[in-house]
Amino acid sequence: MNAIAEGYVKLVLAVGQHDSAYVDAYYGPDAWKTEAERQKKPLKDIDTEAERLIREAGPRPSAADEMTLLRHDYLVKQLQALRARVRMLSGGTMTFDEESAALYDAVAPTHPESYFRAALDDLDRRLPGNGSLIERYDAYRQAFIIPKERLSKVFDTAIAEGRRRTQLHIPLPAGESFRVEYVTNKSWSGYNWYQGNYHSLIQVNTDLPIYIDRAVDLACHEGYPGHHVYNVLLEKSLVRDRGWVEMTVYPLFSPQSLIAEGSANYGIDVAFPGDERIRFEREVLFPAAGLDGRQAAEYYEIQAIVDRLSYAGNEAARRYLNREMPRAAAAEWLTRFALMSAPRAEQRTRFMDDYRSYVINYNLGKDLVKAYVEGHGGVASQPAKRWDVFADLLRSPRLPSGLK
Picture 1 (cartoon, one colour):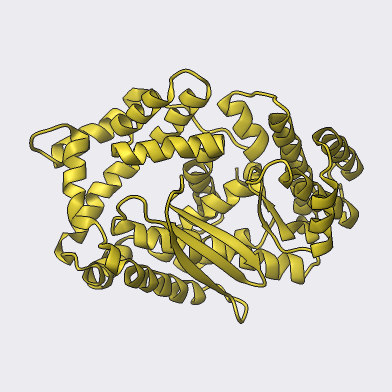
Picture 2 (spheres, helix red, strand yellow):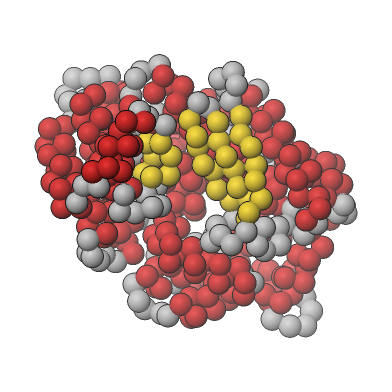
């Protein structure tokens, strides 16, 4: 498997020469990256080589320990996804669901507009007044925007608490760290760029107003116990302890992303379960942002209703990318059914242009990770067990189809 793993890494780097967004992280041998840049292997040759490696991997071993089986399945599925991305780069087309299955090993459920109306009706009753629902929702949220001059303090505080809670349950390598940058003109709200050697660069996009709930969300999702911890544990447990070189590269458009995004989103609830989050925000983050902490409970009751609209973003992306609606209609759909402001909906359609069916990894990914953790005993009433199962998932090369 080591030879297949090396070939896989080199092919991912080769695809990166044709797709600048493909290689999200790499901390393997510098010579392999230099060779990929020098050679710029044609897409057809990349596909042929990937097909050969899949044949060499062969069927699943009949007698092997669980981690060896997971490694075999991971390499085969990641290579299959690489071939799918190569077909796309070569001009091939797929439907939204075909693409997500090929790239991310999962297909999101389809929901009609009526699925979202119950949540919209509930929110309509909670936010009485004049104007459309999105206008009333936006007006309500104005009181919960973090002032720009307080962003750094609020995020630093949220990150420190996420790290403290994570370290109570997951031993982290000495020297792990990350730094935060504030950026603009991006189609995403936050990004973790893993650098290797247990270090990350986290960027937060300040193009649009940042609401108080995003502090804990981004601190956990990008940092602790999200992307940063996920990558640190993979480097420690699989690269350094086992010598699995395939984990030194992270192809963005691959099944690994569903595990990465799903665990990062579910990790928010693991680190800040139930009322613990509201209490921390009311007593610490709201004051740090200069906001009225007495409104925290009501704010999160409202947000819980809005969270029920999560899959509306998938429906907009599916219809837009399947050419069933133009971009402007997709943005309007997001405003109507996902309650995104016009600027945020426009930003989201730019994300769809850039990342396409990647959108399923956030909500479907979270639901699959949650079901896996709870199915292995990590229910809310057993928080220590939940942390243990969650951490074991982060340390493994498990695939989305392996979460079911």
